[in-house]
Image 1 (cartoon, one colour):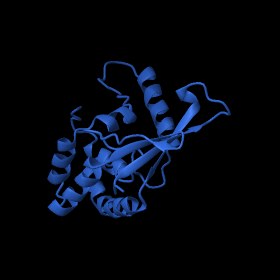
Image 2: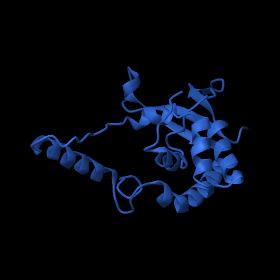
Image 3: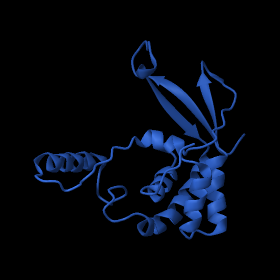
Image 4: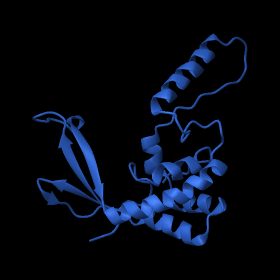
Length: 173
């Protein structure tokens, strides 16, 4: 058994799925890994206010993801009704693609420069770099798939790592 192995199963959304959009991927990881991940997140929570500017919307206590939709609509409305040349810009980022493309050496560099100790940096990097995926197909496991970059969606650590990288140049792999 690999400590950082994630099993992925495709669960049908409809009785007889005909294409991939009718399947929902569900991932399962080891309980011990989840405990380690939770401990790391508790450490990162104390550091996050120093890394994330107050005007970023992620991880604001009491705010829901739906609130971001309202904020985005208000910003776009302001752009439409604004007169003159003010030089505003809005970025739309596909977070799923950004999660998949972060280079591991960049993550390590940023969290090291953020002032985390060597032990916690090494532990975070072990969590990020040692993951293996196996797909459950017809009750059988495929051979392990090992990524070479990116962070896992659904992992407790990933949003904290992503927010600490946010606003920096995101080198893609």
